Amino acid sequence: MNYFKLTELSLHNKRLLIRSDLNVPIKNGEITDPSRIQASIPTFRFALEHGAKSIQVLSHLGRPTPGTWQAEYSLEPIAKKIEVLLQHPVFFAREWIDGLAYPSTGLTLCENVRFLKGETENDAHLSQKMAASSDLFVMDAFGAAHRAHASTHGVAHFAKEACAGMLLTQELQALQTVLHSPKRPLVAIVGGAKVSSKCEILEFLLAKVDRLILGGGIANTFLKALGKSIGRSLFEPKYTETAQRLLQLAEEKGVRIYLPLDVKVSQKLEENAKSICSSVDEVREEDSIFDIGPLSQAHYARVISQAGTLLWNGPVGVFECAPFSEGTRAIAMAIAESSAFSVAGGGETLAAIRQFHVSERLDLVSTGGGAFLEVIAGKALPAVTALEQKFKDAQKN
Image 1 (cartoon, rainbow, N blue to C red):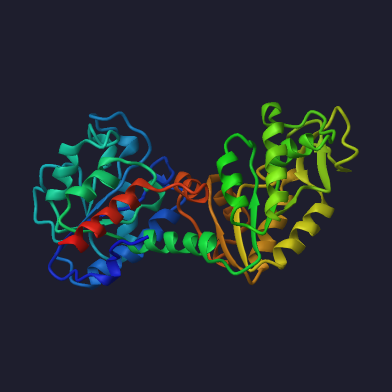
Image 2 (cartoon, one colour):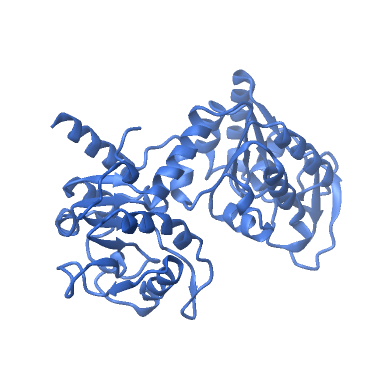
């Protein structure tokens, strides 16, 4: 994977166009989770400190209707937050695609790119207009790198120069380490509701990992495939054969798959639910599995403690509901206490990491949801492919 990196280029007197991922939750005008903004600050600071003449920052927020300005999707609150975190003046430009109406020295956050018609269609004319305003395009939005949009993909082809920002580089390098040069054993923890949404991930990981821990609804489908009674638990009947095939593939590759030994069950999913622990061989017909039990927690923690590298995607129970949060909490704490190189990502995983306050104890908490899943399924990211092509073209000239 070859591409230019921001930290390796001269930025002196250059106009930079940085595509960041500032798609953060906003409620009543207040940012409720600024982590993606915080993750983007090092790239902004590096550009300012290394002589960039001007910096324009692009991002999307939500899914507004193209062609119309909508207040709830405006990036203006984000501009104010960047200014506080960066401790540097930040301009906000609502109208920018046809050129800024005032001198663009310093750092300018441009209004939501998804207000523009043609952004999500990767319109070539729009991409050209974006590229025209800069000397160097910096792709730093890992969370949007799986989208072939005008501001993530098309602009790179028309830019004079294009490179990866510090956040994108950090995320790609961490995932390359995990998937291609890990310290062994490589242990992956994959949870979540559905096998169907993670078939490609599971199959790809079976060619990479030494041990695979499964939880959540995914584990239920595997337990069902092994002939276990899972009561009324969530599972996917159409994917029991897939689970059997993956178990066979794991055996052929010498990968150990770990499934729950005991589970926490209840007849209701609610905050005051009465629950009991049950062996996976003794789940009653009227019960549903909502979490892993203490034996499974301890067993999984031992496997995690022996890892050289850890990859985590997905909770092992309904962690948002207090009676069923202990399993995912145990996984989070085991990873946090491990000396292994640890990488975690995915929307529910990030929520669990925040809930259990372990983000500072992992080596990388990915800012990407869909992009993270694409990489661990072995797929190329369109925005990164564009940077790689730019690098190849430069080597020819």
